[in-house]
Every structure is written in C-alpha cells, then in structure tokens.
Length: 386
Image (cartoon, rainbow, N blue to C red; front, side):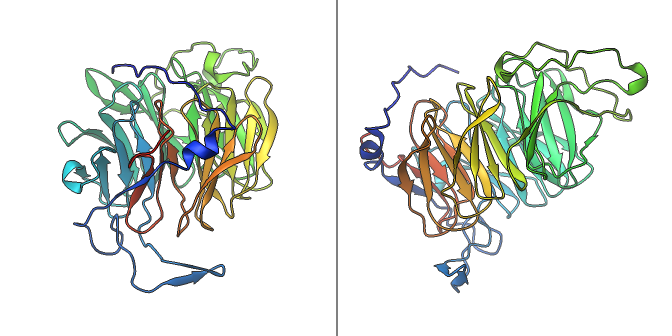
C-alpha cells in the first residue's frame, strides 16, 4: 500500500469554519427493497422519545474503512456486505458480497491488506473476503451467533466475539486455512475488543457489562497445570507492550485471559472503545450516553463527553487523533469534540439516530455514518474546503 503524503492537522479554532464547508454524499442502493435491506424504510413514521423520526428497519449495522481509506464496507440485516468507493457513489461502482445467512453484525478490514476483510454474522460464522475477486476465501464456525470482530495489527489474528460473551481467536497463516483457537468465555457482557495498535498482539482491551474495561495480556496463558510464573507488570501504553508468541492453544484446551489492569470507566455497561491513531487516548463509550477519554500513559480519565442522548454504540477518532465523535441509536445528530479540551467544535445534523460513525483513516476529515434514510452517508465526500 502506497503511503499517503502527510497532512497538517487543522487547529481547533479553524475547524468549525472549515468543517462547515464539507458536503455530504449519500450511497444509496436502489436494488434492495424490503425489510432488513440496506435501504428499506417503512412508510409510516414512528414517534419515539417525542421526536418524529422515520423508522429504518435495517439501519446499517456496521461500517468500516479499509486501511488506505479508498474503500468503505457496510454490513446489514439483509445478510449482505457492500463495498463502496467513496468517490463513486453510484451503486454500479460498488461490490456486493453474499454468503452469510444471517444479519451481518460487524465488519473489519485486515490492517495489512487493503482488499481483505472479515465479517461476523448472527449465522454463527466469521467469513474472510477478498474484495478484488468478490469471493469468500474462508469461513470459520464460531459455535454461536457472532457479534464483533477485531484484527491484530500485524494481520496474524482475528478475534471474533459471540453474543453469549465468548471470544474465538482465529489464527491466520499464509499457506493454510484459518485456525480457530480455544474459546475464551467471559463472565461479563463483552461488546467490543481491540488489540495493541503496533506489532504482534500482546495486549487485549475489552469492554464489560459492569462499566469497566479490562486490559489483558495476550496470548492467553496455558492451562493452570502448565502455567509458569509470570510477572504482572503493566506497560501503560499498549503501543509499546513487549512482544509475545501468538501460537494458538488447542481447540479443546481450557484458556482464560490474564487481566493486567481494570479501568472503572462508567456507571453502566461499556459498549464501544477505540485507541486514537497516536495511541495517546483511549475513548470508551458507555450505555450511560457518555464517552470517557483515558490517557494511556497513566490510565487516568482526562475528560468526559456528554452530548449524546443514548448508548454510545461506536466511537471514532480523526486520522490525526485531534477530534473524536460518537454514534448512538437514540436522538438525532452527533457532536464532534476536540480531544485535548473536550470542547464541541462541530455538529452533524441527522434526521434519525446515527449508531455507526467512522472517521476517514488516512489524511481526510471525512466522516461516514449510518442511520439516516437513504443509506450510508459520508460528510466530505461530495466536496468542500477541508
């Protein structure tokens, strides 16, 4: 992948004026009509929380940019994935991927390959796709309904999560099919996981239903009988955690995660989390409608953002880590905050809740979001002075 020339960050005082010039592009698929489709909208408005909104029965469940920002994927309740070129909004220029027999719950791109992605579905599988050939190159049974998936930064591992709060590591090798490792059952609700952002997987962060985020070592230690003494010193910055092997445990072995540190972040369930591209901050979204920003050097909460109306389903940083946005399935509109001060610098107005939001990963202040009637929208893709 060719690197994008570095761009200068837009300072906080200039951001509101420049962001206001960005125009929004809609990516609408007219071929899908009906309940659960990417674009289906029921004809009768629904009154919810004193706000008149149009009920969208599908409301795209997941969106994700590829590493270069040249493609963006959407997954829907209609069991399909669609890959869009953000500069070509016509559906004829998109790619549809079919194979799942249940709703697509989460999609994530291989961070080392700009045309390979993984998707998990309520059909109980994690599928791996090659966008260039439009084919599913592998399918791994999860043993239960899929909910989430994340990649190790070196592309050696995808970690899928089931709706029963069990994690399934899937190890990938260039010359062999993906291998599922031993299931990791969690005692608490687990909505999202992320690995350290650089190098082999050594640290795993996961949200829990009691309002905390657990920071665990990776890979999981061997069964107790074979375990050896191991110091529990926490390297506070996940980006520079010491390297460890990622050899999978046999599928029938007993494995559990070793917790290094716990962040007591929210008063109710933690739902989403993301590290800033600079690894300076960890943003945690909760069902209490708050986003907390933790400094990864000392794991202290520096500030809390409180502009959303409901559970924070997604949270995302701009490519330079300067700005943060959250998505919720309640209320309308979402604010953009300056990460260093917590000040609101801009707002995206929507006619319906926008549960999925995602900044462009590579040098542009574009923001993709779902929820509004018509399908995927990207602020900035239609032009502007930023």
